[in-house]
Length: 113
Length: 114
Image 1 (cartoon, each protein chain N blue to C red):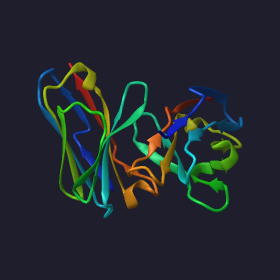
Image 2 (image 1 turned 90 degrees about the horizontal axis):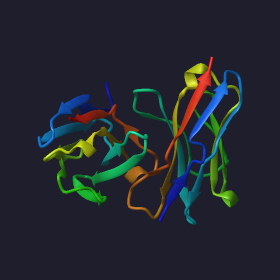
Image 3 (image 1 turned 90 degrees about the vertical axis):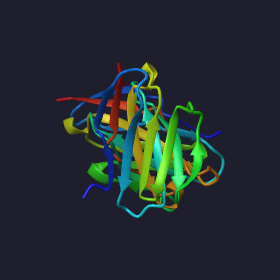
């Protein structure tokens, strides 16, 4: 069983479209995250939810909206996609708010054309 | 603000060479430290972690790292690399006072010549 699963794995879409990425973890962790990895491999945190409550909201355009229906799921919705949104988006989960490290999903490669 | 520095952007070694990748962090309080590896086209996987105790920690695939508190460093080492170690390596820090997030370094790309 995959511990942290993301769908889709690849997403190619046109500028201006709205898209969603889904993430689910079956580890019983209490905290979930979205990270963005750019073309230079730099990893930047976007959002974090602890038990369905938003606890980290970094400087991210408000076109990005996370939603956590329960502590096992964290989805990311992106409105009005722009070329600069092209990146790999990683979902991760942890226990005790990251103190012991994260378990990452396999990533979603988003390409905006 | 916390930060993590990995000074080596790209390291190229031959098989069987020894490896040391540098990592320094800036935070004066208690930290948990991690090294993650990302093989080409894959997600990040935990190599090893330090929480407390023995500053020399051993991880998977023959990797180890040493925490030197006075130098704010957590360098990754491997005595003899293999071609399969070709990957991106990320050092990361979780500071006890931070709001539940791990800060990642910019990564070091390791290329191994067969």
